[in-house]
Image 1 (cartoon, rainbow, N blue to C red):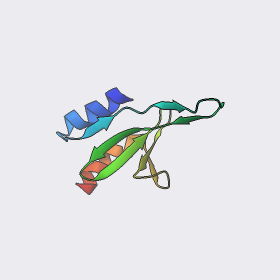
Image 2 (image 1 turned 90 degrees about the vertical axis):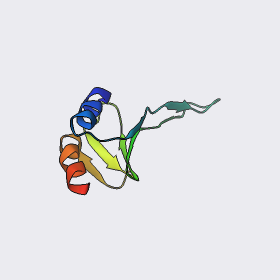
Image 3 (image 1 turned 45 degrees about the vertical axis):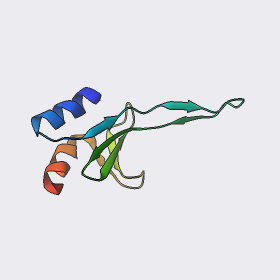
Length: 77
C-alpha cells in the first residue's frame, strides 16, 4: 500500500507527510489497538489500514475507495 501511495504522490508532484501506523497492545489485557497509517496533505489527514481498500478522511466517519484517491486529491487541490 505504501508503494501505491508513494507512486501517486510522485506522479502528481504532491508533497505530503506519510507516517506508518502501529499496533498498540495494552499490557495485562488481550486488547490491542491498530493505529492507521496516515498521510497529511495541506491540512487533510487521510487514514489507511493494511489490507483495506478504503481511505478515511480526518476520522473514520467519511471514506472513499483507494482507487479514487488520486481523483479526489486533484479535485480538492
